[in-house]
Image (cartoon, rainbow, N blue to C red):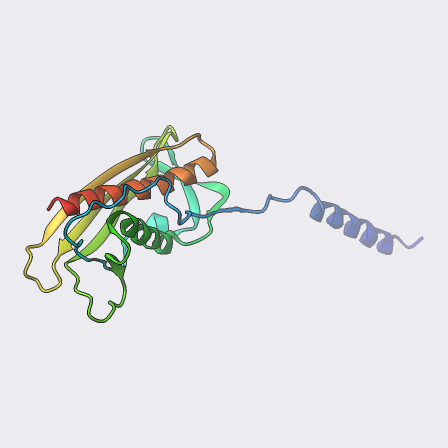
Length: 200
């Protein structure tokens, strides 16, 4: 009996058995839904609302430029949640959702971004920087710390800086619940920013 072909056959069968073994589960993807998680209060009648321009880009910490969901570890560590990823880069999703939420709160057509429509007069320009967007160590809340620089386009209004800090509860430690808490935190950030802008 020729031993060499038999050895080759056995090696091929062993390789096939290994390749058909347990495979890593496919990644799960999560999206920050456009729809606001809470209903916006109806606009109060009065003078026409001023127009705000959200200036791109909305700056995020570098670690949020990856597509993974991050979880805290210890006092200062972080680790990615295996096989759980954002379906859209956060540096694209966050400004899109904030623009939507600010328009829901301040009035459709009163918050713009990008190229301005002809004849539209902007009262204030908003430059937003997200300083922290993270899950609490107990996975019970998601917190956003941000800073918004506000200025008039013509330069007549003095520069002002608004510090923002919001938290949103998570319904549980599961990834889906944490993603929902991220979305609620963004909504609350838009609420806090709107409240501070309309009182100034």
